Structure formats: structure tokens, C-alpha cells
Length: 341
Image (cartoon, rainbow, N blue to C red; front, top):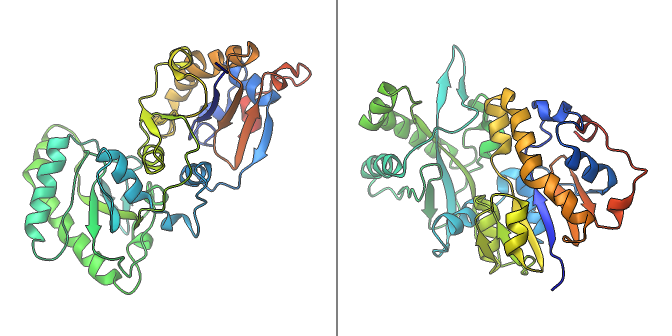
């Protein structure tokens, strides 16, 4: 059996807001050596979503706001249920009112599935007969299925987090109707008993939803990976659409190697960027954990030939590709990680 090849995506690793970008090799010597001896390859990716579409041979055409995220993440969240028609994400969010603007929180409020189902039930009862029926397969990701694409432009959720929402509200021919529906939803959520209980517990209100990621399910891409590992819903949805198995991310690289077998694998270490945004003081701990569980063991495995090739995607429009042969480039000295940010 031949050694497996791995593409490892670590979204948010070199966000400029993180201390990890300024860390030296003492924090992650395996990662620093991997990057120093790898071949840097420009990708042209404008963000994590674009990277995933490219890896599946489906370059996202048009601006980021037009990526058909919703039908793909629905595949993952629903366990492969049909995704015919036009799908739209309607994710629960927390808005903060200021003197002259309304800001979206950096991170979405955490909801139980039961809270999500009840809030969607209240909203759906209000909109009965108007074609708006929210579906909540998870606490964090809600959906709308529409009979046809709306004449509206929506803004990607990630582009609005931490920003004033007003410039990003639905625009276009049908934008006025969608903005009015948003106002109605916000009033319903404000009056909900679920939110009163959340406030009493010191939790942020779910005081709006955000429509984004609309589209129809793209044609199935060629099967590029043996297995996709991780719980990222877009990576999982692209895998399911291509007929690829999706499995939970193992605890570390050693556990992955023990079960992977041969072939080309894709693993997504998700959540790191969100952790760094929420508390920059965590970044040192996160990168040390990443080094102990993944990049350190992968460096050792690559040098020993137990991994045939490794591609690390960290964002910023570059991938880093390394093989056992290029790992022996001893003259390429490891540099502070800030060099790669």
C-alpha cells in the first residue's frame, strides 16, 4: 500500500489580527520547517470558500457573494437530503445598535437545536402563506428553499461580521421586500420567549437572520479525494456532491495515518480562525496545539516517507506543497511564521 497524500486546510492561520502570525519557530518548529522547505504556489483564492471550490475543480464564477454555498452546506447538514431548487442561508445573528449604525457581532450566537427549531416555528407561523419557511437542521445554520432565484443581491455573511449591516442589506429589484421581511423577523425575535430566557442567562439575543449564500446545487464535480475529513459544512457538502466519503477529523495526524489508507485526502482544521478572532490571547495556545497534533507529526511522517506529499492551505492566495524529497532541503532555514503572513 502506497503512502497517502494529504491536503491540509487551516483557515485563519495567518490572519493579521492573530498573534500566531507573529510567532517564531519556537511556537511551531514543524510548521515553520514545512513552510520553509515547501514550494509556495499561487492560487488566486479570495478566501476559504474560493479555495474549497477550486480544490473541487469548481472555480467560483463571479464575486464571493454569488457562491452557491447554501445548497452545498444543506447537503452536509441534512445528511444528503435532496437539494433541488434555489437554496438560501438564513443564519441567526446578533446585531448591536449604535448611535447611527447597526453592527453585526463578529461571531454568531450559539444556539441549541431546540432553540433554533422553536424560533423558526415562530417565524414560519408569522409568514404562513407568503412562501418563507425557515428550516433549522442545526442551531447555527438555517435555510430557505425558494421555487426560483429571487431578483436580489445578498452579501456573504463573513463580509458583514463586525461591520455596519446597512450597506450590506438585500439590494436589487426585490430588495425592498426582503428588507421589510427582515424587519418583521427582527420584531418577532425581539418578542420571543426564547430570547428573554437567553438574556436572563447572560447569552446574546438572536435578534435577526442574515440571508446569503444563495444558489442552485452545482453539477457534481469529479471525485478528487478518497476521503474528506472534518466538520466544515461547505467542504462536506462539496464532498457529498462529488460522491466522496466525509468523516470526522481524527484527534491528530497519528490517528489519521492509522486509518487513512492510501489515496489523496483532504482535511480541514476548522474553527481556528474563529477562536483567534474571539480571543487573540488564545492564538499562542491554538498554534501550539496545532503543532502538537498536526504539523509536528506530519513533518516527522513526511521525512520518514509515511506521507507521500503534503499541501498546506492557510489562505492569503498561496498553498505550500512539500514531498519527502523537498523536505530534505536543509539549506532552507525555518523562519518566523510572520514571514508567511
